[in-house]
Structure formats: structure tokens, C-alpha cells
Amino acid sequence: MVRTASKSSKSLGEQAYSMLRHEIISGVYAPEQPLRLAQLQERSGIGFSPLREALTRLTAEGLVTSESMRGFRVAPLSLDDLRDTMETRIFVETEALRRSIERGDDDWEARIVSSLHALGRQNERSHPDDPDSLAALEDRHRDFHVALISASGSRRLEQIVDNLYLGSVRYRMPSLSNLSSTPARDLMNEHGAIADAALARDASRAVELLTAHYRLTADLLSLAHSDRMARSADGAGRWALRTPPSAEP
Amino acid sequence: MVRTASKSSKSLGEQAYSMLRHEIISGVYAPEQPLRLAQLQERSGIGFSPLREALTRLTAEGLVTSESMRGFRVAPLSLDDLRDTMETRIFVETEALRRSIERGDDDWEARIVSSLHALGRQNERSHPDDPDSLAALEDRHRDFHVALISASGSRRLEQIVDNLYLGSVRYRMPSLSNLSSTPARDLMNEHGAIADAALARDASRAVELLTAHYRLTADLLSLAHSDRMARSADGAGRWALRTPPSAEP
DNA sequence: GAATGACAAATTTTCGAAAATCTGTTGATT
DNA sequence: AATCAACAGATTTTCGAAAATTTGTCATTC
Image (cartoon, rainbow over all chains, first blue to last red; front, side, top):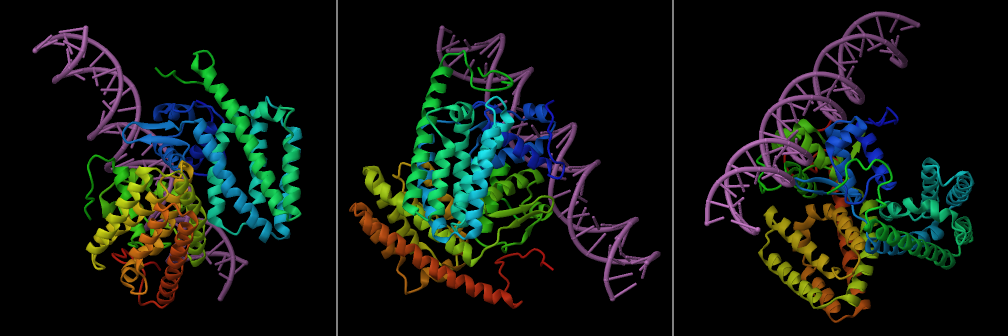
């Protein structure tokens, strides 16, 4: 029913993967909601095999859970997991940042400057009501953090960072519109300060700023998340943003 | 052709997954060797769909690589990756160990004692010529290291440890027979010392011992690995241990 | 009324063939 | 000789139906 709308060069499996990944991240499906193959096929026009492949991959990445003969569900969210994820990010990314500051060359500096610039531009351009622009903003945000640690010299560390980012972005998306407009927080300033410290090769300051940045994010997201939990306790405001295809019993 | 030989309660996809995982880890297939569906179907009697699912999952876990319309291959091995993986293990596991020593309760201590004991028993029982006993030894070894950090309080950290273990075990397997019989190394003593320090809540000593343990492992594996690379350069001793089903051009 | 079992519906999982894509070869052309 | 197109064979990817499994219902029994 809903068009797939993607590049034709990728296999259907890849298309299904990016589609589902995007939909889960942006909260189209509620946590723990079953992902039924017939339903997904209906929605996307993609057959069982590619859908299954995508779901298997998402399961391995932690966005989806599966039980042996009972199919797939959107992975749950919890305050504990949010905290754990953010603290682990701090632990891993500060190390990667230290190493990058130690080893970074001109290209690394250039990547930081340019990704920070792109983030700023998208930030001006983005509007809280436009989901596409928010997704783009999220991508720029990710690019910046990737750039910061891109001279760590450890492929493994970078993979871990990427995976942890994926684990945390789900908590951010639904409240991004709130956050970016919160006057109490000037994200661009925080990012700029981190970039400055990194470029000045001031490792301890950069690490300090990055840690504060993530701790603050964690706290704000915790707040937003417990709000949501509270609200979804009464039946009124359900979580799913679009097309809750069939309410759960 | 080759019997599947597994519990019937699991889906074929799961069976295919554990089978392939085991075969790749134990070096049945050479790194970079293409894994052709027809071939795997022949070998296992399992259909395309479950095999594909298993390969997708293994790809997400880093044991297999895939290119869009060219199928799957066994992931490559390299000295750089070995070093990176081991250093990252040190970084992550020492932190997890510190936290476990801080937070561990009676159950944690019991898990350490019992897994160390099981490791010792399997070590006596194992014979270098029996692949099954070596696989069992490897499992006990893993259990012990998992037990050490099992009180870290961070699910994410534990997942990362598990994934890194998977990344490193491939380097160990083929040379396990050499290693365990090397007189220069008394693995059981190393493990015992680590366990003692952990149980005595001596964090810095435990971390020091664990680091030395992994560094030594990394060095020995590096040696074994460059030996293999050198030997496989001339055509004679190919890498694959069993059934190189059809030589690559 | 609770528990049990049998049956029907819904869903996942698997298979085998068809479609799409890649690889290598042959032969014609420049 | 090098380049290229067309073709055949091999391989991956996808589809749709069949098989296996779980879930829900309803009558029967205790």
C-alpha cells in the first residue's frame, strides 16, 4: 500500500532493511509491537523473504526481538536501557575521542569542521513539524559525532560507537522536536565547544564536555521518556505516531 | 549430505546459524572463501531461506561479509584486526571487571569459582586431536571470562564483550592445539591468578593480570597467524581444515 | 465452574521454482 | 592485439504456495 520509494540499485532486502530501520527509529511502531509479515508485506509490497532478511538483521542489531516460532517484535525501551546505553557511550566514545585527539591529522580536523558546519546549516533549516528535516538533522548530528572519533585508529571501537548510537537514537527521535526548541539548551554551542577543544588538542577538556553533553542528553531523554510512559499508562495517548495498524489486546 | 545433527526444537534457521557459526569459527572454511548457497544446501540439507537467514545474521555479527548481488564470504582475518580486537577487548573487559569487583555479590563469586573449576576439568579431559573436546574447552574458557564480568551491571557492556569474544575466537581455534600444549604457558595458572585477585577484590591486580593474559594471547596468536599466512603463500599447505569443497581459481 | 481436548484460524517457517543479476567466453569489429 | 556485444552458464534473489506451529474457541467432562 505505502510506496517503498527507494533507489532501485539496492536489493529488496536492503530496501526493506532501511525502511524498517527508519520506521522503528522514528517511532512509527510502538515498542514491543508485533511485526507481522503479512502486515509488512501489505504495507511495503515486499515479499516474505526480503522482509524476513531485514528483520533478522535488525534483530542482530538490537532494534527488533524475535522468539523462535512467534515472529518478531519491536525491541522494548526502558529507562534502565537508556541510562546503560548512554553511560556506555560515554565510556567508549571518550576513549575514542582521546585517541583521535592524539592521532588526528589534517583530514580529521577538516572532517570535524565540515560536519559541524553542515550540522549548523541543517539546524537552521529544520522545522519541528517536518519529519524529513528532523531525520536529516539527526543524520548530521550523527555525522558530527562520527567525525570527532574518526581518527581513533580502531575499527572495532568505531563499530561499537555506531551500534551504541543506534541503540540510543530511538530514545531521542520522538522528542527531538521538543529538545531542539528547548531554550534551556543550546545544542550548537555545546557541539561547537566540543569541536574547539578537540581541535585545540585539549583532550581532558574535550572529554569533559562530551561527557557533560551526553549526561545532559540522557537526563532530558529520561524525563521525556518517563513522561511518555506515564501518559501511555492511561489509554488515551497511544505511542505509535502513524498507522497503529491493529491495536493490541 | 552431511547430517545436521541438532536439537529438533530449534527452527532450521537457528540450526543453520549455529552450524555455520561453529564451522567458521573452527576454520572449516578459509577466510574470504565464498559461501555458495547451493553448496551449503548440499552439505546441510537445509533450504535456501534458512541458510540465507543464518548468513544474514552472521554478517551482522561480523563473521561473514556480503556484497549486494554477489553473495556471502567468510570474513577475512588480518594481523591488524587481531591486534585491534584484542586491545579493544582489554579496554572493555577491564572496565567490566572493575565494575564487577565493585558490585559483585555471593552469586558472582560462586560463578567464578564454578566456571574456573569446570574449565580445569575440561582442560584435563581435552585432547588436542579431538575437535569436539577442544570446542568444549573453548566454551568453558568463554564461560569463565563471562563469569568474571557478569556483575558489571551493564547489559550493553556485556553484549560488547560477547561480540568481541566472537571476533577473536576465530584466531584462536586453529592454533588451540599448539597453545594448550605449549610448555611456556600455563593457562590454568593465569586463570587461577585472575580469579584469585577478583575474589580478593583487588581490582588493580586483577586488571593487570587480565591485561597481561590478553596481551600474551594476542602475541602468541599473532605469531601463529603470521606463520599461517607465510605458509599459505606457497600453494602447498592450504588453510581450510576439512573439505575444501572446490578450490578457488 | 474449572479443566481438558479437539478443532479452526492465524501466523510463522520452509521449500522449490522462477526471475534477476553477475561472470566468463566466444566471435566479430576496429 | 584490443575492445566490445551477445550469449550461455552459474549464482543470487525473490515470489507464492505448502508445511509446521502457535493461538483462540467451544463443547465436553469432571
